[in-house]
Image 1 (spheres, rainbow, N blue to C red):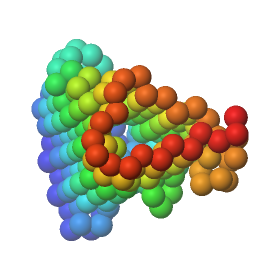
Image 2 (spheres, helix red, strand yellow):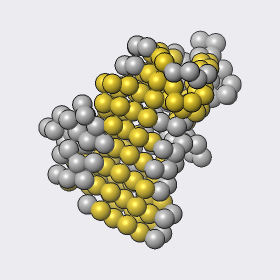
Image 3 (cartoon, rainbow, N blue to C red):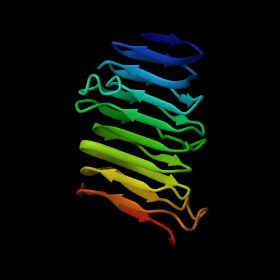
Amino acid sequence: VSVTGTGTIGVVNVGTTGAQSYNATTSTTLSGTSYVTSGGTFGVTGAALLGANLTIDTTNAGGTAAGANISFSSTINNAQTLTLTAGTAGGITLSGITGGTTPLTTFTATGNTISTTGVRTTGAQSYTGTTSSTFNGTYLSAGGVFGVTGAALLGGATSIDTTNAGGTAAGANITFSSTINNGQTLSLTGGTA
C-alpha cells in the first residue's frame, strides 16, 4: 500500500503482506489499533498523528520473525499508546521528536536497531534493541519508568527525566540492561522515589 496526499491522510487498520508507505504534506493520522505487514517495511513521511492506541508490527504477529524497517521522517503526536515491533532484522528510525507537542501515553519499541531523537510520554517508555538502541535529545515521562534492554548508544547529548522536568517529583526508575557508549553527555533524573 502506498498513499500520497497534498494535504492530510487518514487511515484505519491496515494489513498487508508487503510494504506500507504514507506520505502527506500536512499530516498522516493513524487510527484504529493495528498496522501489520508480513516482512514489508512501514514508513510515514511527514508529521504523524495517533488517532487511537496503536500497534505497528512488521512481523505479522511473529509469523515473519525477521520483520522489516519501521520509519517516521518527522514528529509523532497525540495522547495514545504506540507500540512498534520490527522483528529480528528490522530497524526502527524516528527522525523527529515523538510527543513533543502532545505527549504519548506510553511508547514501546522492539527491533534489531532503534534510533530516536527525543520522546515524551505521560507513562512508560521501553526500548529493546537486539543490536543497539541509539538515543539523541530529551526523553521525558511523567512518572513512567524508562527501560532499555540491550546495548545503548548516544547519538548526541541525551537527557532522560522521569519527573517531567519536575512536574512529577517522585519520578520513576531508569534502567539500562547493558552497555552505554559514545562520547556524548548523558543526564539521568529518576526523581525522589
